[in-house]
Length: 409
Image (cartoon, rainbow, N blue to C red):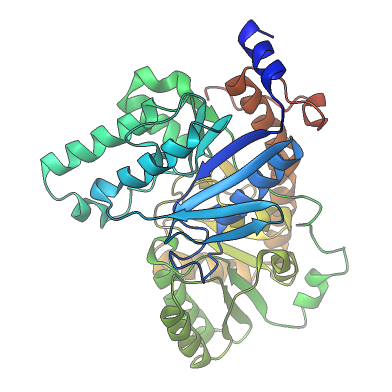
């Protein structure tokens, strides 16, 4: 341990503190909880930090209210009046004024580290978010695109470390700015293997022979997640076959869209829409036969994909973002370009081949063990120790070394 770290430990009279800046765990008015992969990541990160002895405070966009994310972990809100070039400089500055009092700051989304980051800080990339067709419309001129890129470079240059959940972002950044390579840490997303687990040998697979094949879309209801293509594929397949049914399970950004999707589902036989809180999703996965992750863009190592894999289900995914970090085509799942035609073809084939579904599902579970929650916690703990320059005692999390990341990352 170096002299600075020793001095910090002697001066500390209370628990370590960490402030985390995000965009929204709750709607800006504080009345609506946001459910999604990023929010589940936030909960697990908070649990880890609390277990390591930190006092954790989150900050987000809002009007000054505060809520609890989990017992003892507050979410506080601050105004964010504008968002030029997909950044929030005023929110960043308000947070940084408070962050100087923390032992550590975490920018939960990379662009929140613009225009500055405090000294001991980490930013997180949850995947490339500018690969959807409409993104260029947000920066329509060459000058606009140059300014957006400049701001992203500044956001990546400030924090001591950038955690990336996939290798796609690291490869893009290394090709764009090779001088930033030392800042990146590949820590893919996680799954709790005890919570998300396959059925027993006489479970859903046997039942599937007496009921329609159940196909699940466990995603937020947005176009970038492939909602429109998946909805049309469901219409085509339920009209062509009487032995399949589709379950759309996820929230939208507002009640209006959820109502529209519900009305659409009610108008079609064997198409269902509902949403469940995260703790009920393991039961949903166990009841399904095929899970589809047809993201068009803006994707990392999707938690929903890992959960489906851990549940031993046949997974059909696109090759957006970090999904190829999880799915080896033809071994533990199927990778497709998520067009309506491709989805119909693949799902029609899998619905007719229970043996292939079983093989893909068993291998998916095998691969999921490399992404366990315990491994993720150990990797994060080692990174926190590196950034803080001192060991984190009392948790036992560092007792077992995590496997090394894949070569070249």
